[in-house]
Image (cartoon, rainbow, N blue to C red; front, side, top):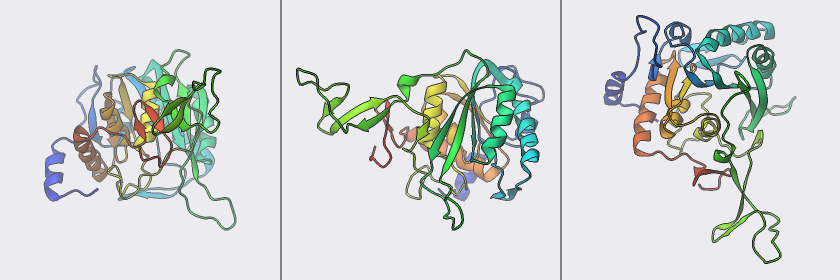
Length: 298
């Protein structure tokens, strides 16, 4: 994705850059450029239905002009604790939370998350990408921790089923398919989702959603989280918005959203993607109300 000078001029007018003068009573929606720590002081309490928390992992990583420096595990845990502590007052008692990390960062996530939330599960997704390692196993997966504020929360299992080819097409005595569907395109079964995701591709250069962001999540991944743990009209907060995947998917699925990021270039990419989403609401890999396997062409 590229931004022309005319794109930047047009999009800058839609970017939220000024903090409210007082704490709001209704959610702020859109794309905000700034530090979430400044914004939390003005956002309304107990209004967030779904929090997507994808902070920098405990790695030395450059995000445009900004750089996150790896630190001792204890220090990173303390930093993550401070982040979550500021966000908790914004969450509804029925809110769900997804925290992203790699295998090392997950040590800190688990320690902090169980202090604030009910930890429900850990999703592991295969990135199908990663640097080779000569003296260790190649790191090609990430974790997403599923948490809730209480025992009352939203989870729509029927909206996140995965369509898989039937390997053993058993039939009933009358010859009809047994727990699977027969079609001209093949034999499929819609299965309940598990906590092991191997159907996701990192956005690559020919996909419309692709940007130069170094850690961009695929829209298909966010679609699973939003469909499972929110309803149309719900408010979704992403305080480390990056290139805007959460905001874009929320718009496509008719959720309210606030995406916050320090990097103005990333915020402009988000706004550009939101403009594109008005014309094309499709999500790669999600069609007909189900998620298809990786590289299925759907």
